[in-house]
Image (cartoon, rainbow, N blue to C red; front, top):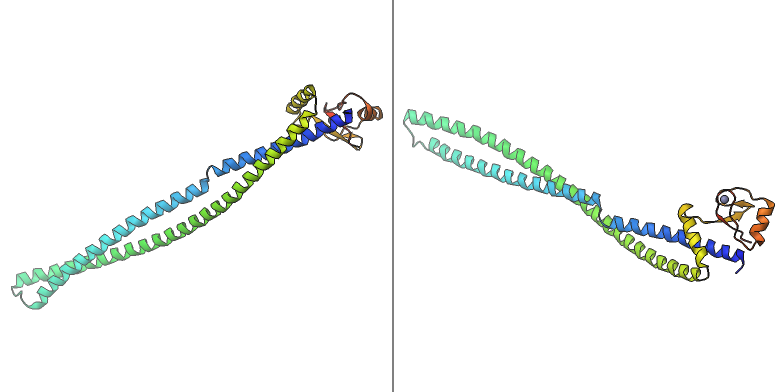
Length: 237
Ligand SMILES: [Zn+2]
């Protein structure tokens, strides 16, 4: 292989490695987002809380209604006694009238309480329905998003394997010492060991090459490096 061909192979290898890095990073991000969704967990917790509140509210409403029924029953009983004419003793009659009044007052309070409970339960019910709807939508979105993510993850895996195969094929033709130099340079030079020469400049750092430098990049038997950034120069004819 000529020096230019070697530089071209290294450049191609670098393109593969850069794409491999992008693919791997995206794969990792997908694996991370598939592992859990905090928004969905928060919505589930909120829904459960409202459900519990609704349950206690319904229980309290039932109790208020039972208490009201009880008052109604007692009041009806005393009223029946009062209006039946069975009680004639004035003292007893006065006590009965007082009892009826007390029960009527209690009935009013209990009716108000039962009404309050009913309204509170209704608003909890509405809230629970709203939360359920939001949760359901979020769960649907999450499943859809997941399906897309799973598909994307599989696509990336296929692409990663293709790139890996190409890389292996390419490295066979490159000298082992040079590969080692390439790997070392990539680690210390932001992943770019090779820089193309474009418009007589190093593509990476933009330094302009002198005429003799350009000439060496084109014809020298040795790989040339940029005098400014130190990257191996690749002249693409
Ligand atoms: Zn440079």
